[in-house]
Image (cartoon, rainbow, N blue to C red; front, side, top):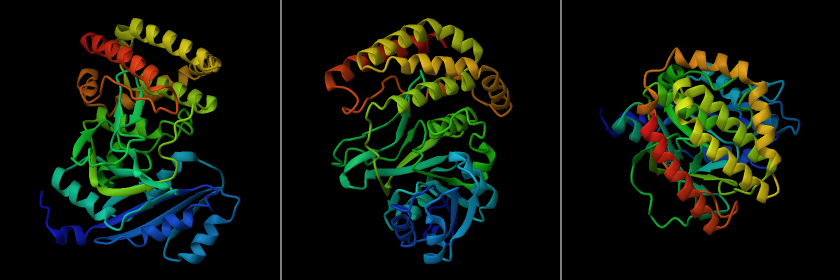
Length: 352
């Protein structure tokens, strides 16, 4: 593919931003977006039923945006409105609490033109402390744990190489509109409501042979991107949605093969949560999965229709480790848990 500057300059990108009562952040986001250089773009603002008047304030201040207003909060499924209405040859999903470097978009386009079809993310830095990394590429573990590489680390140039990752961060996901339409809509079943939508979309793309990449030259600043407090509701959603993804994307044969290892892991996680005083998280997640089993089965059947890679090929793009932020647990506990999961993961790979 050509990496010529004229191709980048002539490119047209649809920037899709979701807003839900984002009056505190959305204006800063849009101001930074409209300082974007090096390519042509449109801004599609999708309001998820806000009650703070932020959508209309933005439309008044930035009349060039294309505003779509939902009557209710559709969460990340609202991105599908953007997919249906995008006019660009490229598309990027950007969080409303993010701001961007002026060259962010042209660097993503250049990377796409150089490396080809895929889902792309840039380097995510902490908005309130730009020396701290939020994500330098998101990675996925064989047991469904997704995490942001480098989260909480000081940016000293340790992640400056373009490379393949497991899935792109939800705060900024870029691709061609054609590729996005091939992968399809973001989940509309509400099975993944509020959490794991980026894991789900990247995993779905991977089963179709569409890989994800990290482009460090594209810089995005994100509010709260290094936050990792052990919030019971957040952990419940993560655990529940992790299992939704596992049961949706792994074949029944694979689940049975690694079931003993999953059993060991789940018991260990329950004990970990119990020590942290939130043992009910695992019980609630399991109960929810049982209740949703018929919906997950239907979802799995639909995914199989577009699947191209087998589980063994898919997990070759996963990692064995899982890095927990120090805000979740101590470094010593994190190292022990990581050692434990790495060894379980290595055994699981031999069984798939």
